[in-house]
Image (cartoon, rainbow, N blue to C red; front, side, top):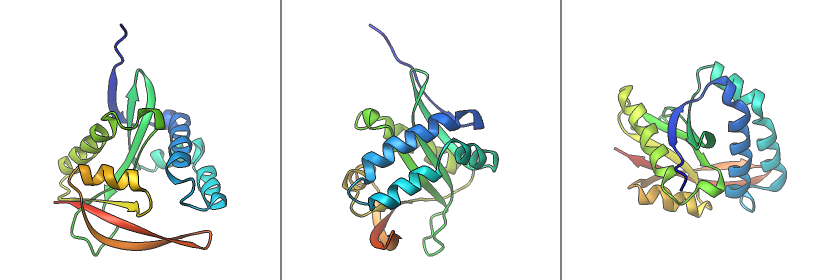
Length: 168
């Protein structure tokens, strides 16, 4: 029997290729049929390895979930961008490659991101999710998130509703 180790750590620029791959695979799985195809492919294309390396160099906080030494997921996090919500912290993105979803890794990555925000003095947490992304909504609801606000985001002329989940 083989045991795979799992680890969550902060990403460095050298992880950009692996993050870009997870981003591509997870976004295609999550948003195909929700975000118009042309907009989705364009968004994925803009977030290649160079984009991720530059973001990390500019101090974007990116956490990586590694399974057996391979990047299986990532989260980006920082200060809440929605001034109308009182929570201080925000998880901007939390994605896993499809084969690693549904087995508890997302929960571990979420908790580590929240712990990191709390350790830096952020009180409360917000996560925005496209309303049509039912698996993500179910995931955040299972973690106790409360749906408290909504907004609209436009993708290639298609208006999509997004909802905010919060934890105090």
